[in-house]
Amino acid sequence: MTQDLFTPVKLGRTELKNRIVMAPLTRNRAAVPGNVPQEINVTYYAQRASAGLIITEATPISPMAHGYPALPGIHSAEQVAGWKKVVEAIHAKGGKVYMQLWHVGRISHPSLLPDNALPVAPSAIKPAGQAFTYTGLQDYVTPRALETAEIPGVIEDYRRAAELALQAGFDGVEVHGANGYLLDQFLRDNTNQRTDQYGGSIANRTRLLIEVVAAVSKVWGADRVGVRLSPINQFNDIRDSNPEALFHHVVEALNPFNLAYLHVVEVGMTGDAPQVVDFERLRKAYRGNYIANGGFDKARGNAVIASGHADAVAYGVPFIANPDLGLRLRQAAPLNVLDAAHLYGGGAQGYTDYPTLNATVA
Ligand code: PHB
Image (tube, rainbow, N blue to C red; front, side, top):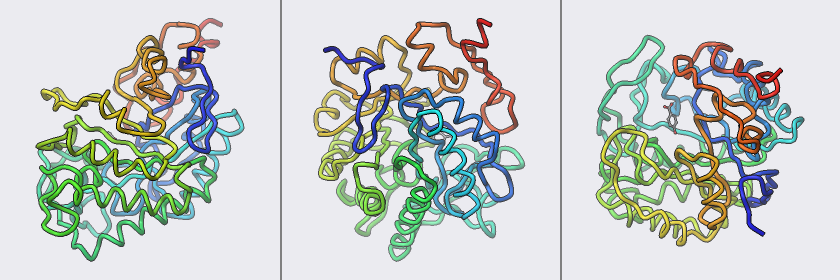
């Protein structure tokens, strides 16, 4: 039988009613101070529960992991209580949800960090560009290179956040290894120029990701852990001299875990000439479930599932404007237009006020 977006699938321990995954989407609408998920976030996620799997917006694992305003975190009891309501609302509508665990590394600003601390990174290399802060755009600063002796503390922050996510009732967690944030900064050689066991060779640069995946898997069981990578994305001023070799090594190092899934952003998010990775070859090297992401529509989504390239497809931007994206894809219904002015921050406008199909035709 040919499989498509609407065929159920089991990823690790998690049964999905369809293969349409809501990708992690930063929306900056947590209650501040405290960075706590609030009622409007519950409404937003519950509206999207027809996805086979929701992956939450990237969620900072510690106060030092924040890099944008009004992010909901996973490092306090209040945040766990807020997330619990999100999870319960998704489950009540028959959905599944993984939390994406995030440390931004150098993509931050002292004004977003405790005691105006410098952001931390593998090496003291300033990203090009500007940070989004509570007072507008400000130039990035040169981050502080983590001492080797501090790295166990970072891994412990991931482990504790994973434990808090378990307490909040999630179905699993996704380790954010993509898009130029901390773990990706360790992977790539334009941001990692360390001389200890976390830098230099590809195996050394992969070490932190693998140690984090191991720590989080101890809490959850690897069959409820996913990993997200973005091998050709240069967003956040990130590059590698040999992404093909690097990401093959990463995939081989992830194989023994038997994770719930590997989630791969197969496109770049900037206008830069893309770096090149053979995603067919990468997928074949990975021996588990694979979620593909990056500008898919219905036809291409069905095609990558039918061909066996992907087990599920993650849709990002289409889920912002279409709470009932699954139904719309199934019926080949027209999609709502994105309100690009209200992506980041604010209230209900451009967040929970997009009409469903039923409302549109009523
Ligand atoms: C963003 O806030 O722009 C953002 C956050 C996490 C990502 C990508 C982009 O993985």
